[in-house]
Amino acid sequence: MKKLISLLMTFVLVVGLFAGFSLNSEPANAASKTVIKLGCWGSSPAETELLDNQIKEFEKLYPNIKIEKQVITGDYNQQMQVKFASRTEPDVFYLDVSLAPAYMAKNVIEPLDKYIDKNDVKDFETSLLNGFTRNGKIYGLPKDYNTLAIFYNKDMFKEAGITKAPTTWKELEEAAKKLTKDGVKGMALSIDAARFIPFMFQAGAQINNGDKPVFNTPQAAKGLDFYVSLLKKGYAATPKELGVGWNGDALAQKKAAMVIEGGWMIPFMKDAAPDVNYGIAKLPKGDKEGDLVFTVAYVMSARSKHKAEAAEVIKFLTGRQALLMTAESGLAIPSRKSMGGVYTQKYPERKPLVDMVRYSKVYQFGLKGAKILDSLTKACEKLYYKKVKDARTALEQAVKEIK
Image 1 (cartoon, rainbow, N blue to C red):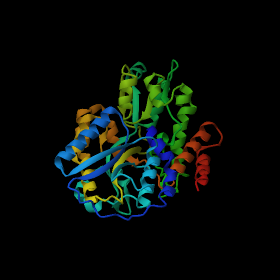
Image 2 (cartoon, one colour):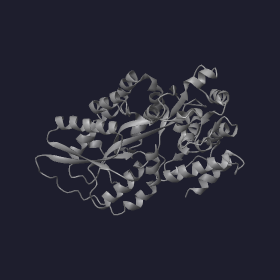
Image 3 (cartoon, rainbow, N blue to C red):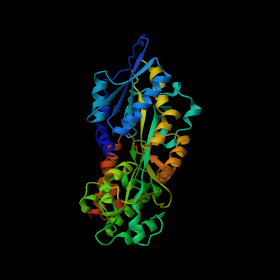
Image 4 (cartoon, rainbow, N blue to C red):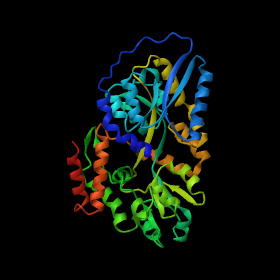
């Protein structure tokens, strides 16, 4: 999640840094073995091993293509801009969905349509694919995803006499109220647009229409109002108020009974709090279901000299064989519908994370995405700290601040 935030903070730099980009592709190298450079960011040892094993399987099937993995350290997006400026960008690379609009708008990545089977593409979760589609063209194939869900302390639920996870806003508030006792809060809630936007969706709101912010509506205000009301009523507290760094710490240290986070909580809780007996539940329903989905795709540089081979790499790494390896590893939720069942069969307790994808919108808000998210977060702060009279006023001000 921190990586997503870091990527988004640099989002605004993308347009300017691509200014000198041109699409002067050169003839392909006629060497007997084609080398495809694959750019990715660093990850855990287990995730690194998974990607390395997927690459080995690819090279068995395609002995004339070698994948040269390039782990990009530091700020991934900034480093990619440097590589584009020096014309040394990899042929294939990771692209976070929040950054995709800028890359697609500037035509620095190659549309994949002529390389892919349109029937096969139907196997990808639709919301994920939408994040990498522009003007009817597909620019990236998603490799995995995460939705948001409620992670809750089962023992605290039992002690409070709560027999099931909340499924509605009313039940969520009632549970949070019961669980708030003995120095423990019912929930830890971040003042973060990436956590309260799902409640706006659940109230029927829309955040943006293309690059235009459109969240100054009664529906958006209703969702924000409910989220902040849990804090104002004392049934929830921010991580800072609980003396921890983020929501995950609050659950791990038993300072809150519920948090809203994604699948990244699973390895975190295994390491940080193996004694905490926790469960995962779908986000509660407001007027409707709603959630955010975070994803990363493999994309191809528009200047790659080996586009046909690069396309084979992308198709394999997002194909059924590679994603079966992802599903069985449990390290991420595979992006294909056909693999969702494989994943939940092996990890049934994680099914709520998969179930929410059908109700989710991708974490992407157009070319002004960074400004939209920043303004929404500030609106939440103003409402919580009583600097505005109501949520509608906070959101009206936020929309005006986005130029």
